[in-house]
Each structure stands twice: as C-alpha cells, then as structure tokens.
Length: 188
Image (cartoon, rainbow, N blue to C red):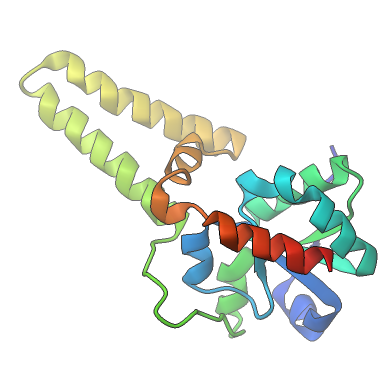
C-alpha cells in the first residue's frame, strides 16, 4: 500500500481553486466548518460516489479532507484502488484552521460535535458506567475493560470502530437528497 500524496494547508490554500475539494467527514462535522468550495461525501458513502469522483478527477485534482487527515488518507487509498488519483490535506481541517485559514459554516446549521469528541464522550461514558455498575455487579467491570481494549486497538491500528458506529446515528448521516445533489454537481 502506498502513502497518498499530502499537501500542507499553506500549499492547498495557495491553489485551492485548482482542486475539487471533497470533505469525507459526517454531515454534522461538515456543517461545523469546512473548506471553501468543499463537497460533502462521507467516507462510508465513497463507494457510491466513485462514478462522480472519477468524472471530477478527469477535470482536475481531487483534494480529500477530514478533521485530522486520517479519514481523507483512507479515502485516497480507496480511490487509488479504483484508479482515481487524489491527494489529502495533511492535518485536515484542524491544521487548516490552526494556520488561520477560513472554515465556512452554513447559517442555522445544527451544532454537532466533531467525531473525535463524540467518541471520547461515548467511550468515557461506557467506562464510567462499567465501573459504577461494577460496584453492584462485578461482571459489569468487563464493559470498562472491553472499551479500554478497544481504545488500545484503535490507537494501534489507526482505525476506530466506535466512530464507525457513531457515524450511523441520524445527526451524522447525510440526507439522501443532499448526497444525490452533490454527486450530480460533481458529474456535471
């Protein structure tokens, strides 16, 4: 497996108009702030978007974006396997905003926590629940052990099963009409 090409925010900002920017975060994360001109195609819908992304890539370079650069690198790898070249934004929207570049937020967009924060809340709550319930019923402590083991596995493999589950919650899912509109725009 090859490492996808990565741009630092200053490089991407200097030539942002040359890229078709695809934000692979959940719709809620996208609404909390995205690069100017970015289209939202959540990572778990990437396979559906392959024809539209292939069309967009034929007109110019795809720049894949997420919060930290991990999901966008995964997207680049999946696109490369489908014969679609793409590059990733190193450090994601966090690095972009950290360097003072603008993030756009739709008016009246619901406030949705970033996925990393949602994972920390869920994991922490489950650990606390396992410990609290373990004072009354000792086997409940295994819940805390399972979550801790999952976090270690997540760090070691740079994946996150809990994020994949949380991404399926209604506030993290795209409306079908939004995704279809995005795909039509990319194919035109």
